[in-house]
Image (cartoon, rainbow, N blue to C red; front, side, top):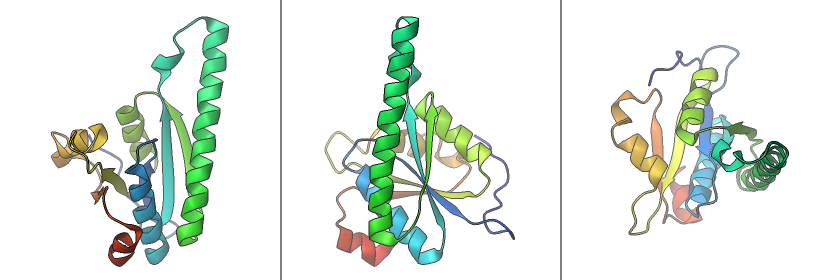
Length: 165
Protein backbone atom coordinates (compact mmCIF):
# COMPACT_ATOMS: atom_id res chain seq x y z
CA UNK A 1 0.00 0.00 0.00
CA UNK A 2 1.36 3.40 -0.93
CA UNK A 3 -0.14 6.71 0.01
CA UNK A 4 0.35 10.33 -0.90
CA UNK A 5 3.16 12.01 1.04
CA UNK A 6 2.08 13.09 4.51
CA UNK A 7 1.79 16.82 5.09
CA UNK A 8 0.74 16.64 8.74
CA UNK A 9 3.37 19.02 10.06
CA UNK A 10 3.59 21.48 7.16
CA UNK A 11 2.26 25.01 7.50
CA UNK A 12 -1.53 25.03 7.26
CA UNK A 13 -1.80 21.37 8.23
CA UNK A 14 -2.35 19.54 11.49
CA UNK A 15 -1.65 15.87 12.25
CA UNK A 16 -4.62 13.55 12.58
CA UNK A 17 -4.87 10.38 14.61
CA UNK A 18 -7.29 7.96 12.95
CA UNK A 19 -9.36 5.34 14.77
CA UNK A 20 -11.50 2.76 12.99
CA UNK A 21 -14.69 2.64 15.05
CA UNK A 22 -16.63 -0.59 15.41
CA UNK A 23 -18.68 -2.22 18.14
CA UNK A 24 -15.85 -4.19 19.77
CA UNK A 25 -14.97 -3.60 23.39
CA UNK A 26 -11.36 -2.84 22.58
CA UNK A 27 -12.34 -0.07 20.16
CA UNK A 28 -13.11 2.08 23.19
CA UNK A 29 -9.50 1.69 24.31
CA UNK A 30 -8.23 2.91 20.93
CA UNK A 31 -10.56 5.92 21.00
CA UNK A 32 -9.59 6.79 24.57
CA UNK A 33 -5.86 6.56 23.79
CA UNK A 34 -6.12 8.52 20.54
CA UNK A 35 -8.30 11.24 22.12
CA UNK A 36 -5.99 11.67 25.10
CA UNK A 37 -2.89 11.70 22.89
CA UNK A 38 -4.45 14.09 20.36
CA UNK A 39 -5.47 16.44 23.16
CA UNK A 40 -1.99 16.37 24.64
CA UNK A 41 -0.07 17.05 21.42
CA UNK A 42 -2.59 19.30 19.65
CA UNK A 43 -3.52 16.81 16.94
CA UNK A 44 -6.92 16.20 15.41
CA UNK A 45 -8.85 13.00 16.04
CA UNK A 46 -10.58 11.34 13.09
CA UNK A 47 -13.12 8.55 13.59
CA UNK A 48 -13.93 6.19 10.72
CA UNK A 49 -16.94 3.88 10.51
CA UNK A 50 -17.35 1.63 7.49
CA UNK A 51 -20.71 0.27 6.39
CA UNK A 52 -20.37 -2.97 4.44
CA UNK A 53 -22.28 -2.91 1.13
CA UNK A 54 -22.83 -6.68 1.10
CA UNK A 55 -25.54 -6.15 3.68
CA UNK A 56 -27.74 -4.41 1.07
CA UNK A 57 -27.79 -6.81 -1.87
CA UNK A 58 -31.55 -7.32 -1.73
CA UNK A 59 -34.39 -5.82 -3.71
CA UNK A 60 -33.83 -2.28 -4.90
CA UNK A 61 -36.11 -0.38 -2.52
CA UNK A 62 -35.37 -2.59 0.49
CA UNK A 63 -31.64 -2.37 -0.16
CA UNK A 64 -31.76 1.43 -0.26
CA UNK A 65 -33.69 1.58 3.01
CA UNK A 66 -31.26 -0.86 4.64
CA UNK A 67 -28.27 1.19 3.42
CA UNK A 68 -29.80 4.40 4.81
CA UNK A 69 -30.55 2.72 8.13
CA UNK A 70 -27.04 1.29 8.40
CA UNK A 71 -25.51 4.68 7.61
CA UNK A 72 -27.77 6.38 10.18
CA UNK A 73 -26.78 3.78 12.79
CA UNK A 74 -23.09 4.31 11.97
CA UNK A 75 -23.47 8.09 12.28
CA UNK A 76 -25.29 7.72 15.61
CA UNK A 77 -22.57 5.41 16.92
CA UNK A 78 -19.86 7.85 15.77
CA UNK A 79 -21.70 10.70 17.49
CA UNK A 80 -21.66 8.75 20.79
CA UNK A 81 -17.97 7.93 20.40
CA UNK A 82 -17.17 11.56 19.50
CA UNK A 83 -19.04 12.79 22.58
CA UNK A 84 -16.94 10.46 24.72
CA UNK A 85 -13.73 11.77 23.12
CA UNK A 86 -14.82 15.35 23.83
CA UNK A 87 -15.58 14.40 27.42
CA UNK A 88 -12.26 12.68 28.13
CA UNK A 89 -9.89 14.94 26.20
CA UNK A 90 -11.67 18.08 25.00
CA UNK A 91 -11.07 17.23 21.34
CA UNK A 92 -13.60 17.66 18.55
CA UNK A 93 -13.30 14.58 16.34
CA UNK A 94 -13.91 14.46 12.63
CA UNK A 95 -16.51 11.80 11.87
CA UNK A 96 -16.25 9.86 8.62
CA UNK A 97 -18.69 7.23 7.35
CA UNK A 98 -17.77 5.26 4.25
CA UNK A 99 -19.41 2.38 2.47
CA UNK A 100 -17.34 -0.54 1.24
CA UNK A 101 -14.77 -3.04 2.38
CA UNK A 102 -13.31 -1.90 5.72
CA UNK A 103 -9.65 -2.44 4.77
CA UNK A 104 -10.19 -0.85 1.37
CA UNK A 105 -11.97 2.19 2.78
CA UNK A 106 -9.30 2.61 5.46
CA UNK A 107 -6.62 2.62 2.76
CA UNK A 108 -8.63 5.04 0.63
CA UNK A 109 -9.13 7.47 3.51
CA UNK A 110 -5.41 7.44 4.30
CA UNK A 111 -4.70 8.07 0.61
CA UNK A 112 -7.27 10.89 0.45
CA UNK A 113 -6.24 12.70 3.65
CA UNK A 114 -2.57 13.65 3.70
CA UNK A 115 -2.85 14.90 7.30
CA UNK A 116 -3.44 11.45 8.77
CA UNK A 117 -0.23 10.77 10.66
CA UNK A 118 -1.12 7.78 12.84
CA UNK A 119 -3.59 4.90 12.83
CA UNK A 120 -4.63 3.86 16.34
CA UNK A 121 -6.05 0.37 16.83
CA UNK A 122 -6.67 -1.69 19.93
CA UNK A 123 -5.94 -5.38 20.25
CA UNK A 124 -8.46 -7.67 21.90
CA UNK A 125 -7.07 -9.13 25.11
CA UNK A 126 -9.10 -12.31 24.60
CA UNK A 127 -7.81 -15.73 23.62
CA UNK A 128 -9.27 -15.47 20.09
CA UNK A 129 -6.48 -13.13 19.05
CA UNK A 130 -6.01 -9.39 18.56
CA UNK A 131 -8.85 -8.96 16.04
CA UNK A 132 -9.02 -9.08 12.24
CA UNK A 133 -7.89 -5.54 11.48
CA UNK A 134 -4.92 -5.69 13.84
CA UNK A 135 -3.99 -9.12 12.48
CA UNK A 136 -4.18 -7.91 8.88
CA UNK A 137 -2.09 -4.80 9.45
CA UNK A 138 0.47 -6.37 11.75
CA UNK A 139 0.71 -9.42 9.51
CA UNK A 140 1.76 -9.16 5.90
CA UNK A 141 0.86 -5.47 5.46
CA UNK A 142 2.99 -4.12 8.32
CA UNK A 143 6.11 -3.40 6.32
CA UNK A 144 4.24 -1.68 3.51
CA UNK A 145 1.70 0.28 5.55
CA UNK A 146 1.98 4.00 4.65
CA UNK A 147 1.73 5.46 8.17
CA UNK A 148 2.72 4.40 11.68
CA UNK A 149 0.27 2.22 13.58
CA UNK A 150 -0.19 2.36 17.35
CA UNK A 151 -1.74 -0.77 18.82
CA UNK A 152 -3.25 -0.24 22.25
CA UNK A 153 -3.56 -3.34 24.42
CA UNK A 154 -7.30 -3.80 24.94
CA UNK A 155 -6.89 -4.59 28.63
CA UNK A 156 -5.40 -1.23 29.64
CA UNK A 157 -7.40 0.87 32.08
CA UNK A 158 -8.10 4.59 31.67
CA UNK A 159 -5.43 5.35 34.30
CA UNK A 160 -2.86 3.21 32.48
CA UNK A 161 -3.66 4.91 29.18
CA UNK A 162 -3.50 8.35 30.83
CA UNK A 163 0.04 7.54 31.97
CA UNK A 164 1.02 6.64 28.41
CA UNK A 165 -0.89 9.16 26.33
